[in-house]
Every structure is written in C-alpha cells, then in structure tokens.
Image (cartoon, rainbow, N blue to C red; front, side, top):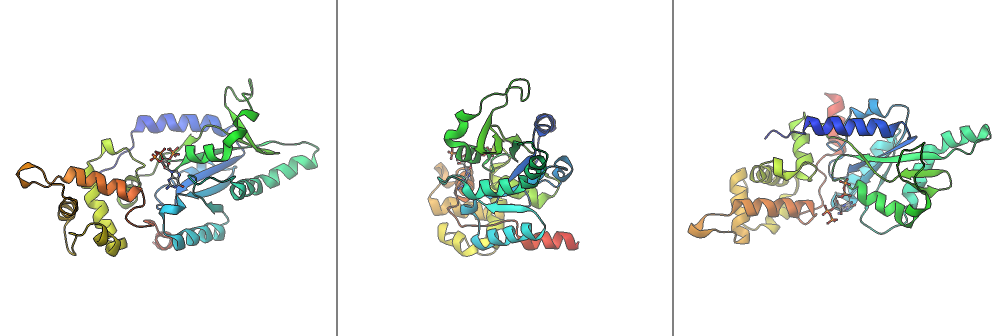
Length: 288
Ligand code: G4P
C-alpha cells in the first residue's frame, strides 16, 4: 500500500509554517504517543533550528503507559524537554505551561538582564490529527479574549496569554509526516493522520489487524472472537465481519464495514492501549 501526502498540500503547509516561525521563540511539537517516531518528521530539525523546543506526547491515554514513560526518558536523555498529555482531559495544563516556560527561560532571562521584559511567543505544531486544536483549546480556555490582534506586528494572528511572559499562537502550524518508510507510513495511517478517503480502507484494516496480531494478539482475539493464529490479512478481516455478524445477502462478509469498525475501534483505544513505535525501534534505527 502506497501512502501519499499531496505535494500541493505540503507546499502550502510549509509556506504558512515558515511565515509563522518568524514570530516564534518556542516551538511546541505535538506527537501521538502511539506513534512517536512516525508522527515526527526528522526534516523539521532544520526548520526549527534556533528555536527552543518542547515535545508533547499526546493521546497518552491510548498508548502503553510504560512505553510513554520510556519515551519521556528517551527525550530527556537526548536533551529534549517532553511531557505526556491527554489533551481531551480537563486540566489547567500547569505542567505543560511550566515546561514551556522552562524552555523559554534562558531567553527571558537574557532580555531581563538588558532591562527588557520580553514576551516569549510559542506555537503548537504537528501533523494532522495529533490533537493540536484540542490542546490549544484546552490550554487557552478562557484566556483567549485576553490578547487580541496585534496589527502591524502579527498581521491578524491571535495570541493567548498563558503566563506573564508567555503567549501562544491561537492557530496551530500544520506539519506533514515523512512517508518514505513504509512501516512508519502505515502507523501514520492506522492512527488516522492520513485521510481515509485517499486509502483503501479494507487493505489498511487488514494491515492493522496483522500488526495488532504481533502487538496484542490476546486482546484482539477477545474483541473479535473468530480471529485465529496464522490468518492472512483478508482472513482476519473476514473473521472480524463474522464475529460481528456483518454478512450481506448471499452470505458474503461485509468486509468494508468490518474494516471501518476495526479502524474506529483501534483509534478510539477500544482494542488495547498500544504503542506502535517503541523506543527500542529508535535505538535499532540509530544502530543501523
Ligand atoms: P489536530 O488539530 O491535530 O488535527 O487534532 P484535533 O485536536 O482535531 O484532534 C483530533 C482527534 O483526536 C479529536 O477526535 C480529538 O478529540 C482527539 N484527541 C485529541 N487529544 C486527545 C487525547 O489526548 N486523547 C484522546 N483519546 N483523544 C484525543 P475526533 O473524534 O476527531 O473529534 P471529536 O469528535 O473528539 O471532536
């Protein structure tokens, strides 16, 4: 299965991002805790050079708890400020704000030494569907109204004051996934960061089922009782249809309906709490 990101889309996203970056001191990159490698594009290291950076490991509720911890330790060991997050949970985001403040601290202090009260500006960035808007809504809350347009300086951009020296851009920066690696590209599609209407959902769901057989066979077999060891991708999908009684006239399995159910249930965390990209994969990559 070839998974593509429209080049036109990408060019526009890149242009908008570059414009916004001129105004930004801190880049807050949101990644999906289930696929922290696939949802980060290494190309952005160049784009975000000279910016303070923070990683938010979002959707922590859908991923493996132990692996979330390993990822945070991994980032820390590599000198990157990172934190786990469930953006859909109601919270004042104190820990996240403290981490962003910490990332900006050096810059604020430098300006303070010169007698300038510097306002640090931050922007949320990430590939589609990682929870950028949810995070902004959660962190911005009622503060939205406090900082308006700043004509001339920010050209209509909205900023939200989240602490005395910290403002957050109200609109997130859209990043694009790196899809050259087939396995990582699948992970991006499994978690729903590539629009399903450009993909063959049955093929995608078959691949997901096969992947889940290696990650969480027991949970999968409990959820879809007709699944058995050694099944091919299409047999797995038929087994899901059979388990759920998705049978069309003439006794044909409704594999399209089964495919949509599998994708929905996986994305909603109903099958199991799974991390597809493990820290150990990262170590493997660097050893290769
Ligand atoms: P984006 O701006 O990066 O594209 O992502 P967005 O905030 O729109 O979030 C995409 C989906 O992920 C939304 O679900 C949102 O509710 C969900 N989401 C965001 N953060 C978390 C999280 O920490 N945990 C979980 N479990 N889900 C999260 P949706 O079904 O597309 O929309 P909605 O019906 O929930 O609004």
